[in-house]
Image 1: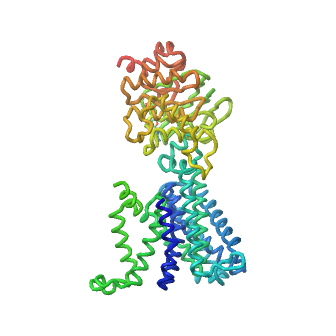
Image 2 (image 1 turned 135 degrees about the vertical axis):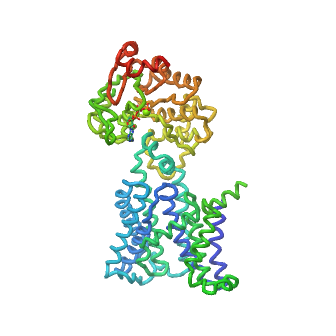
Image 3 (image 1 turned 30 degrees about the horizontal axis):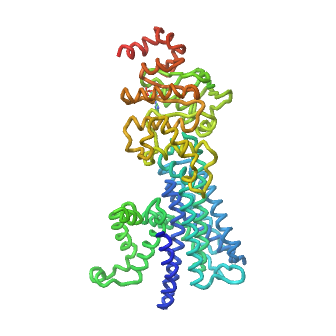
Length: 317
Length: 247
Ligand SMILES: Nc1ncnc2c1ncn2[C@@H]1O[C@H](COP(=O)(O)OP(=O)(O)OP(=O)(O)O)[C@@H](O)[C@H]1O
Ligand SMILES: [Mg+2]
C-alpha cells in the first residue's frame, strides 16, 4: 500500500513542477529514478544475494553504450535498442559472473572490479564511438512514430520502468528463487548440502542483476543523449554501492532511497549556497565531494542499516 | 548401497583418511566409531561431496560418484547432517525445513509465484517438524532454539531432502540424556525407510542402534563387523573401546 502511495506522489510530482514552471526538477528527478533502477539492480546481487560485486558499472555502462552506438548507427527504436542493451549486459554478466563466482570474499570483490575495468578500457579504446570523449546521440530513442524527447513523457517512461523493476524484485524475492538466493547468503555450505546447485543460482542472480543494470544504462544514455565512459568507471561502481549501503542493503526500497539521497545531496551542495555554512567555510562548495562525504558518514553512523531500516523501525514502534 | 574403495584424503601433511574401504548395505544402520581426530567427519565430507577425494573411488547404488558435486549427490538420495550445527539461523524452524523440502521437489528456477503459496512444501515440512519433535517450535527462529532443538533441526534438514542414505555426524553431540533418547527413537523409526551411516561417540546409542560397526583409527579401518564381534575385538578394545566402555 505504501508503495502505491509513493508512486502516486512520484506521478504527481512533474505536474506540480510544471505548474511552478520548474521543469529542471523533472529532469533531475528522472536522472535520480534511473540511478534508482541501477542501484536496485545492484541491491539484488549485493543485498539479497550477498555477492559484493564491485563491477556493476560494467553492465550499466555497457547498456548505455549499446544504445549510444546503435543510435549513432541509425537504430533509434527503443524496441530494438533497449532489449539489445539488456541482452549485451546480461551476456557480459554471464561471462564475468561465471568466472568471478568461482571465488569468494575479497577475491570476488577484486575480480569483479578488474573485469569491470577491462570493460571500461574496451569502450574507451573504441575511437570511432567517442573514445575518451564519450558519445553524443542524435536524440532520444523512438517508439513507433514519436520520440521520447519530451521531458515529461520521458519522466513517466522512467517511472514506469522503475515501478516494473521494483514489482519484479518484490516478486522475485518471495519466489522459490528468491528463497534460495537468501538461503545461500545465510549459509552457503548448507544450501549446497541440502541439494541446491549454489553456483548456478548465484550466477542466475548475477545475470538478472546485470540485465537490469543494462536497462538502467539504456535509460541513462537517453537521459541527456550522451554516453560518457565514466559510466563504466570503477568510481561509478562505487557510487552505486554507496547508494545501496546508504539506502539499505537487501531492502526493496534501498536502491531508490540511496539514489535519491545521494544525488539530491550532491545537487543541493553544488547549486544552493547555504548561508550559515558559507559563513563557517566560505569555499565549502568547491569541496562538494568532501561535504557530501561528511553527510554520508553521519547518515551511516546514525542509520547503520541504511535509511530504509529507519522507516521500518519507525513502523514497528 | 554405498561402497568406498581405498578412499583417502590428506590435509597438508595430515593423512585424515587412509585407503578406507567399506560397504554399507541397504536398510542397515551402520555405525562409524573411532577416537577424536580419527577422520570420521572427513570421511562423511568425502561421501557427501563437500570434500574432494584425493584417491580411491566412491560408488552409490553402483554408480561412481567420486567426482560428483555435493548437490548432485543429494539429488541422487544422499544427505548428511553436520557435527557442528549448520542451519539457517535467521529462519524459523518451518522455513528451514521447507527450504530443504524445496531443494528436492522440482526446480527452484521459478521467479514469480510466492513460495508461501506452495502448501505442499509446508505440509511436508510440518510433518518432518513433528517427526523431529519440534512441532511446537515451528515458528521459532532457529538461532533462538535450545542447543538440543538445534541439533534436532540439524538432523531434520537432512531428512527433509528425502534421502535414501543419510549420514549423521554425531547427531547427539552435546545433548542431554532425554534429548538423546528422542534421537535414538527417531533413528529407530526411520530405519525401515532409510539407510543410515551413524558417527557417534555415545556407545550406548551405537550398540542399541547399529546392525554393523566400523572402527576408524588414524584414518584407517581397523575393524568392521557385527556389534558383538567389535565389542570382543582386542585391537578395538585397545585403540578405542577400552576407554569408552570403562567410562
Ligand atoms: N579442513 C581441515 N584442514 C586441515 N586439517 C583437517 C581439516 N579437517 C580435519 N583435519 C584433520 O584431519 C584429521 C581428522 O579429522 P576429523 O575431523 O575427520 O576427525 P573426527 O574423527 O571427525 O574427530 P572427532 O571425533 O573429534 O569429530 C584431524 O587430524 C584433523 O585435525
Ligand atoms: Mg568429527
